[in-house]
View 1 (cartoon, rainbow, N blue to C red):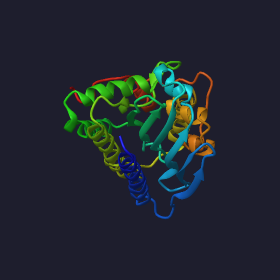
View 2 (cartoon, rainbow, N blue to C red):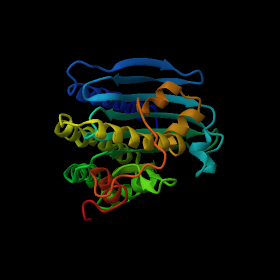
View 3 (cartoon, rainbow, N blue to C red):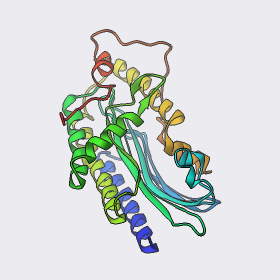
View 4 (cartoon, rainbow, N blue to C red):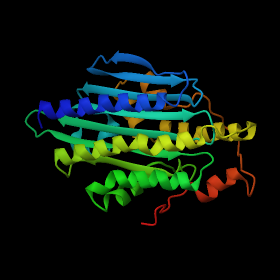
Length: 304
């Protein structure tokens, strides 16, 4: 591991942020991402980009960060106590898109790289990331396309990679207190360092590159579908689940807050509007009930 490896990862992440923002802006007639450059007192900083009040995207954020610190936060060492008290450098691109139209799913993606060092000890590095989809009114063809694209991202690295990281995604994005998945899954991986640096980096790039290929066609297909107050109300209710997961379980959110990160950038993942209703239940046989009965549970979408 040398400085050129770290620079290559950073350059890729900055370019990925640019490409994703450009692709999403092409779906908007007039709205554009605003950019906010920030620095962190302990070390490092980032480039936050947020698009609000668009015709397609109600609010979306695409963040790049590269931060350093003197001690890894508890969220990073809970399962790896040997990393406690190590200095670290963490960089990544993280994004969440909350569309206007309830027929367009919310999406999330993240790719990241972390280095943990301690004098006299070998440097430890790993990659992580993934992407997942949270529909409100799902279409099976969209779900299959999403998972087919996720599998395509993994296929060059082995037949067992997609099933492994698909299962990890199902388990990670699970709201235990609701006994349901956040959405229909995708990919999730973390602590990836058993491969060589070159292969691990290549896999992270494949995941990052396939995100926009997976999401944009779904946006384009669904963004002009007519909807009414009923669909909007259900969208806002289901967005509450997104908030619950991010604040209770999400490791990225916890890492950012525990490491003294920039709160505005960390919490840009939240929807601009969300509703909670006491003990709400969908009408039996309704489109809303179909989400619960057919989609919010782990399943083998591709029959692999």
